Image (cartoon, rainbow, N blue to C red; front, side, top):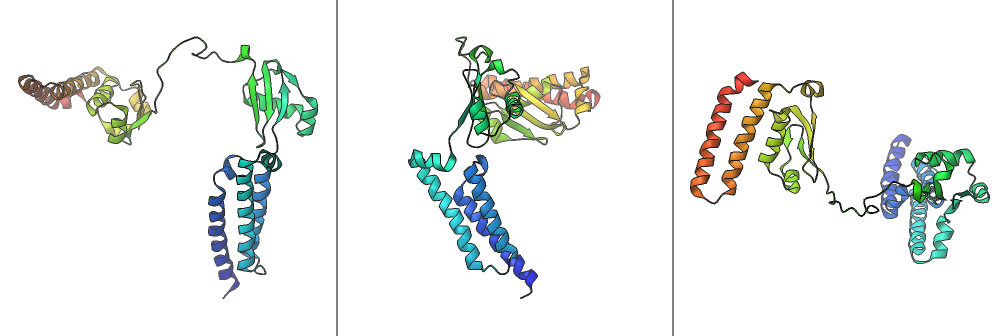
Length: 286
């Protein structure tokens, strides 16, 4: 077999074998890159590269090397979850850089962090003054966690003894001009309500809407396909058309809500009349 075909086969084998190892190690390998994860990643990458292009390395030797470097960290991670000394050995300990508002110079030197780098990290946490910081900790994954002093922290509703309604997940109810019915059902609102809200904002055609999102409080955000066009389109004719659509939708909704058969028929007839009127006026109101 030609060498180039052999290299391709070895690369494919190494790729899928490495993918299997990464699945075993889990998301932790990419979400929290500690010094231990860094070393393991370099070793596995080096072995994979050798297995891919170094024809002097046998398939079996490469697979054994990858498996060893994949399984050993996995075992150590499991042990570190059970035994704290092993966790400190594998991951290290967080280092306090600022405590009680005072810089710990020895810990700063031990962590190989300069004052300029510390200030950069603090600024990324919106702490531009050292006097605003109560505690700063150098985490095992290389990030610096910052706790501001109480007087410099934002006031929360809990501190003001305010009770607020919990926000729920906002849903995209229109995507590329089409209503996402499942998402709309999850919000608890109806299609008639959505059309009415769109009408209030002068939207006559769903095709003009690229995306629309509803939050738990019923606030509707709309992003138009042509933002410049739709931002300026709020003429009286469009408002009249929107009102007619809203009235028709409301009448349909009333017909569904009532158990009185006479009222139901009345609402349906009036909704049909409004829709007929809207259809006749549509060419004039565009």
